[in-house]
Length: 512
Image 1 (cartoon, rainbow, N blue to C red):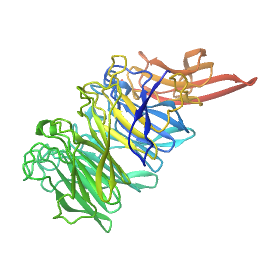
Image 2: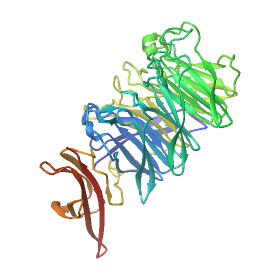
Image 3: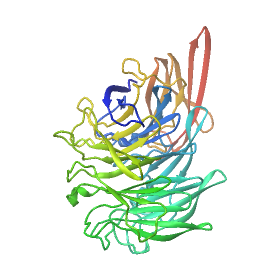
Image 4: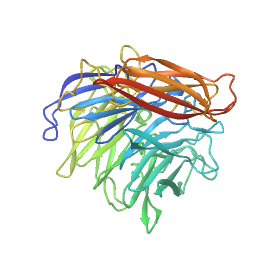
């Protein structure tokens, strides 16, 4: 289970927010393969780092990797799979978006199918007994839309969860919709739906969004407006009593064809940041529009920022992340010397104006790494995803961490989790094979037995001694009848002259 972290000193002039020198740390999946898209989405809490792997190379195994922060150390813990993982052209795309908020982890799966129709879903996890436990699968209301992309964007504030579906039908148009859910009696329930009042086909309403206490911003990055074909737009809604109502529509300046205004959005207490992404077609450097919040509807942005590199295809603004007086802007085609691995630009609010402080780029970048597709800043870390980056000539993806100290490792190997862990088998339901995934922290005896719904033992799947690590076991029920089965994993190990035994049982559903 040799997940790898590489460390490089990296000089950044971010004082006083960061010291003069930061260290570049690379997180690389221990089981990475071609086209895994590891790092396509990232979320962070005080104790955990979550990284998605869309696994285009193995459509069944869409997963979220969980890492633990332990002071100046980071440890791989285990992988989260959906309880109903689905194979297919690209699986359920479990992990297409990630959001951590208020002790809850939300995982978007925009291709999850219902009756073989890709609809999308959001999985809710909460931390219990040392593992993240699936609590709810949130699906959109009927009628379900084919490839509606439900969960392509997520935002949360208090008990309100906002979910984008940028390809949903509304009326006569495939304009996109957004759904607002409220946390009531331990579950999220649909509360309100949003759709553009001036909808049109393929405007991608809900491509990005953000919710605050009394305002919602919903981006429509491909909207054709008076500013130009495909210029993009952003709709704002204000809360009146308990209902959100349309307020105004933000547009870029005229002659902004194919700009993609609204490809990303972020807010702090005083500002709204609206990024662009389609400047590859626009043939001009990307931009981020900054508005003071709240602002009258007639106000133009009080500042527009660019990378300053004057490269026409940089896609500056494809991602934005704001925290206090700090702003990260991703540019996945940003240039470094003679290549285009991508870059992230760090801005600081000084005297009311946002000023660029540094350009961050990977030490080992290649053309098309997509470094900067997602970026997050914490008090002491900058976390950047690069889902198309290479390791040993394999484009599995990476996540880069920039810290004021090297992360603790042992000869480039992350220490494993210190608890026995068994994931839900995937896919589930299945026909006729499924995967059982477990992790043991110490050498011990593993016994895996299969039972039918009446509790009768059917077979022993494994009975052998295993070294510490993560293991996958294929369960093949070819020839068995449709029904509910149970697999029981028993782990026995010795420590300090004492024998310890742990048993976990989970349900598997065979459907033919």
